[in-house]
Figure 1 (tube, rainbow, N blue to C red):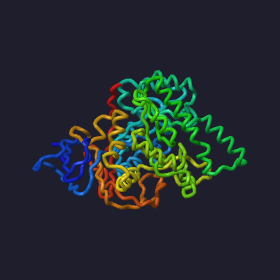
Figure 2 (spheres, one colour):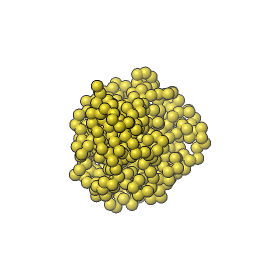
Figure 3 (cartoon, one colour):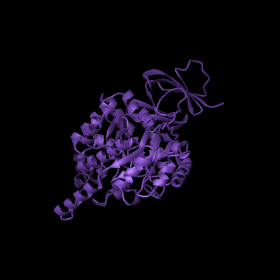
Figure 4 (cartoon, rainbow, N blue to C red):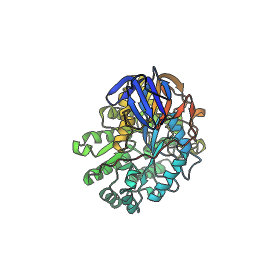
Length: 451
């Protein structure tokens, strides 16, 4: 018989709200909620005083595997996820080789089967010349094996930079998978860089990153992408919003169009702004760049109002040596999977929002947007991917304790209240009592396409 685990006494965040109850796991599935006393179990977990949430689904990570594994790999990245309460991730295609064919997608899925501690899925990336692969990925069996197409409309190089209008029109018009995009206008970015280099005699500082990748670059590209989605009636997801104007654009969309377009925010844009360059230097360098404190506040308002649908990390690790290079040789990106949930739990503790809202943004929302089968809710018949959190636990974020291979966090030294204490993937404990599993418990995510 399948192993049966009873999680007893937690405050459980259910689809209808929070309730103190018990949850029964059997095999890899939630077998019951509010289980009668006396049910046969193999393991009982006393969760009194703690909160049980669906496992977090992070729809934007860069785990660098294959090809750039000195920064991160699927084992180290997925172990960091497990410790952070993330039980499923969707990974981006800009690895080496790039995931721009179904053969490369299959190779990455096979790699994850051998390495990933948590559940996994991989986008297929658009290039200037792989429309046939994108079309193929939209048909069985591939349509249920990838969340969708990732387009870098800016902030990439080589084949994965797709800013040619004719190519973009074809992708939006002819493919069938959902599309997600990094939106920064390359023409604006290049013009800004040229202007600043001339003014500064070729000597740029990291603070110039936000002047080069400015709000106009973000908004111009976002408007362009939203226009493509609306004209072609395509499901489209805006990654990592960074400006107040982008939030206002979403608010202005009429209901039929708003149903096509979803959006997310990331912790670095919610908690950091341009003033943090003084403290963090190139550790605060990311794409899209940090904006103003007013933009940061606008993102929080957009999240509260529903203009922004979900949260994600854009976990993008680089070594400290790489990040320590003088700007602009320093790479963009920050790690976040271990502190993502604690950062948000700390805000819950301060009364900014509720655990019910957190679950909507970090669990239910990603499952809905990407049509992920049987995940994102604590409900009978759903996968037993769960995280138990202690809202009273206080810990300091420390570089030396990070499980990500890059070994640092922009939140080093930050004291947070509210941390994961146990995570389950498919009913198996992958994190508990400070110990993270080494075995590849993760399973390939299935996308239940309804269109």
